[in-house]
Amino acid sequence: MVMPLFWTVTPPTLLSSLPKLMAIRRREMDGYKKRKKKTNKKREKMRKLKFYLQIEEDRQQKLREEEEARKREEAERRKKEEAERLAKLAEIAEKQR
Image 1: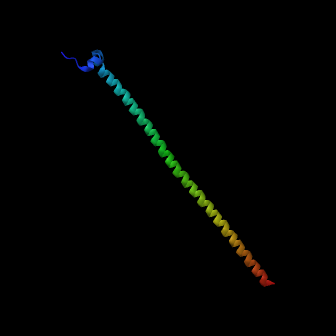
Image 2: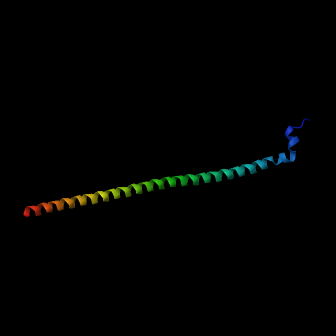
Image 3: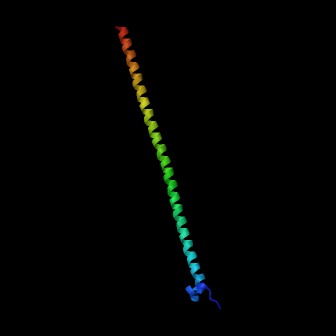
């Protein structure tokens, strides 16, 4: 009888426990895959959260800039109106002299 080559390397007692070892290995891999999936899910959640946070910060910054521009324009408009009003008053005062 010719013995298979793997018997020379692996004793038959180890071969009998091979299904158990494979089952253990499968469970370990399943656990690893679950942990990996959970980690990837957390990482993806954080990535999305950072993305939406950045969008919100950009939106708020844009609103602040628009508000500042509006206030500057309003101040310039008031300053111009005041200058026109003073010029009119000066003109009226000049006519009354």
